[in-house]
Image 1 (cartoon, rainbow, N blue to C red):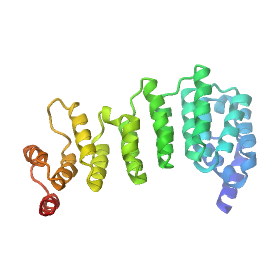
Image 2 (image 1 turned 90 degrees about the vertical axis):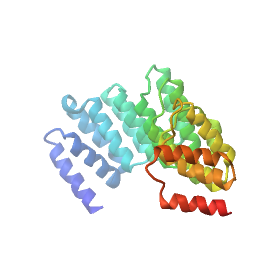
Image 3 (image 1 turned 135 degrees about the horizontal axis):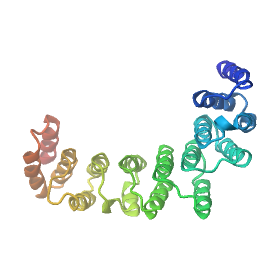
Image 4 (image 1 turned 90 degrees about the horizontal axis):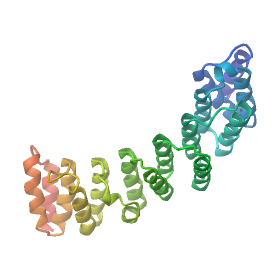
Length: 280
């Protein structure tokens, strides 16, 4: 665009005189990808090399990779990464690895390529941080790559890290949208870990829509082991009550008695939904 070309020219004029600050470097990287994608690595890394004292560091490398990934394609991200590594000899710090892996996953890199890079890093004793895994998982799920995200979650747990709540919630959301929640739950062992309330509600809502009493019962039972006799999150009772009431299960009454002990009042919508299910 004309704006990108104008910004790029202004950066070129200024960068000939002094090193660029990180904010401007990000903008220049994005403008280069938009206006001159084949020269991104050459121009950006060339500028960083000319001002090595100010820009030959991991913070600048991560800033550039983040910016390129936001608007570029995986090949461009890798080109810039290779140029930074080989020409500037910037060590692949945790910050750089996070920017590279998260950026590639966001830019559209294949799960296979991400797995190859992870294997290369681990072979060279470069440990991937919890944030690095989380960025890959988040971006895979945003692209609807549920299987790939599950694989990264497995790798994350193998490293001894906990999968963050937002990732489990997003996984439940995307799996429900794709109609593969039951399969995902059985494969990912989510029934064996404490789930955040948001993920629980998504899963139980899906059970309610499908009338899946068995899975709802299994989820409830598996989550109760983490609360030591306490109550489930209040927002979980609605879908559980609807599911068991529609099935004519006596457990609905037990849930209702538990719910009224912890809630100030039941919403009019929930009461109406339960009455309708009783009538059916």
